[in-house]
Amino acid sequence: MNAPVTARTATLLLVCGSIVVSLSLGIRHTFGMFMQPMTQDLAWSREAFSFAIAIQNIVWGAGGPVTGWMADRWGAGRVVFGGGLVYAAGVALMAVSTTPFMFMLSAGVLVGLGLSATTFSVVYGAVGRAIAPEKRAMALAIVGAAGSFGQFMLVPTGQFLIGSAGWLMALIGLATAAALIMPLALGAAERRDTEVHHVFAQSAGEALREAFSHRPFWLLTIGYFVCGFQVVFIGAHLPSYVLDKGLTANVGMLALALIGLFNIFGTYGFGLAGGRWRKKNLLAGLYFARSIVIVVFLLAPLTPTSVAIFAAAMGLLWLGTVPLTNGLVAQIFGVRYLAMLSGFVFFSHQLGSFLGVWLGGLVFDKTGSYDIVWMICIALGVLAALINLPVDERPMARLAAQPVR
Image (cartoon, rainbow, N blue to C red; front, side, top):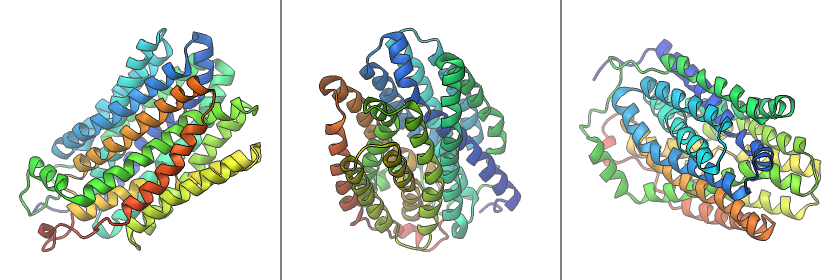
């Protein structure tokens, strides 16, 4: 076995990786605020805009296993650098898209590819390998919280840019922010001479066959589908939902910012809790709590206060699934192929994201309301809670005689 990763190297990777995720997810969470101004100025339907964002999510998910495998094989730094380049280009081209097809290629394909290389599966894989097992839950929680902080900071920034300079210049500004990911990739580079590998000799194909034949892997995968459906539907359509109900654009912006703010505490808290209590029980409780929060939100009178309370409550539950789900993958299968396996699980999340954001636009265009999709969100939350309860958290037998690294 090679020498362990030094504390300095691990800290640098954690800091740079966290900033990368913060920028990547923060920019991505601003896109919902562009729906109304862009569709009105360009005479597009909401379904056309939603379909492009849906394609973004499916490309993001489909690219995850590939970029994860590349990061496992060649290190996260190169993958993050390329992802930052593609991401920045995609956001810049969103600004000059004049047809729904061009918007689908830029916001959908390019941004989706960029996200797949600069977010959870790639960064979590690198951090999971660099950080000692006893500190891994806290490190994953920090990365997740950083993504939430990016949402909290960049959503108000995006709204300010849209209001002061227009949506086109706002996208140019966000493209510039995405370009900052490239220099940060240097700090996210793994030191291949100090990388820790499993003693167990396992190829990528063997790791996939092992995971695909293990029931808990599929239970986690199905549960993650629900997470994607809920959060992307809410993130993309909540600003338009509150506008449709007669509230102002600032209420929608504040809601997304509050989700990001409270998600910092929620993601970090669930990540730490996953180091102390059974992760599957925490996941089940989180999904069930989401359904309760949505029910209360829909039954209560819609006011700026009720929207803010809903956003705060949902923020606490927003991405707590990420450190818990990735932590379970690492716990059960080890970290040698963590980025690749997390990428496959995340693909299911993005299938849910695709369906949630696209169905939201389609249902609204057909019925003039989001009510049907809200009901689906509630039912899926209960289903995900039940699916996670029977997950077997025990590590694979091959890991029993060695450290889980």
